Image (cartoon, rainbow, N blue to C red; front, side, top):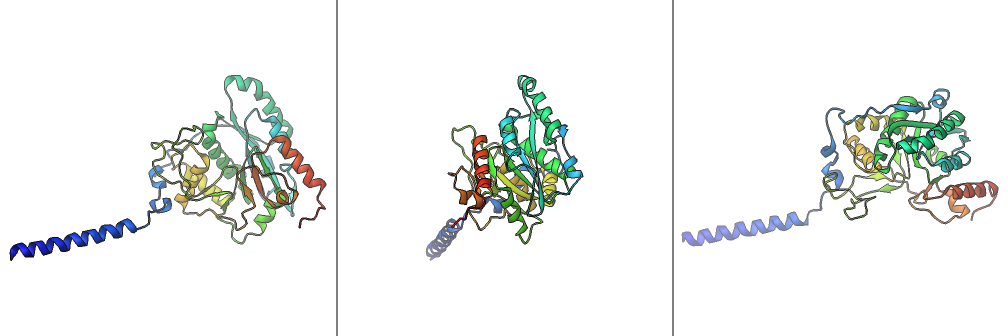
Length: 321
């Protein structure tokens, strides 16, 4: 009798365990936001604050006026032609829809050999245009996160009277008028962070070094939501909060993912525009109607930026169907 009772109890427990296991396996895998990955990178004190010195920190344009948008272009020292193309096209510091837009270029320092050949050129540009911002770190791809921190630091400290900042790469075409129009039409903007969104994007563990990130540096299977570094827009109030948070979040290799970690810590969601034809991760073939409609497209040469801008200006009366 005791044996039968024991067998019955065993079968009941086995069945219950099986039911619980099946239920558990059917549960959805928690997303990156549920795991709160920022906690892995977070410190209570701003131990990650880097004290790099601004060796050029143009700020007169912001002190003298109240720009609507400040575009911060990530540039390399040697990209003189790209900077000139931007200055003569979408970064020409004009007023759009009654709102002023100003553009600056962010650079670091080169190797000793690079500095010998480019330092005077960059400083001449600074004197001529007043649009170069520079800090004393080595300007490399792996230091893009340092340049991002520099961008948020400069905007927070020297240009806090703007309403928005936009971070952009130097090979991006921006339809500045559309950018302003898009922002003017938004209803809520205090915590705005928008651009080309990456939601549930996964780390690359393969052999391609440029996009590879190790498990040691990022031990999770999904990145937090973020926007591509090609060009994202941030309200200045949120930019200031992000900069303060950066001192407490350990930097990772990818600057756009790093900003995503800061957003996750601040519990701010990426704003995904309903219109999917505004931000383009890769170059699209020139079409006057497409380029008249978009905000930013990535991967263009200096000559293409010049040619496309001139074509849009020349055909401003063309009617798109």
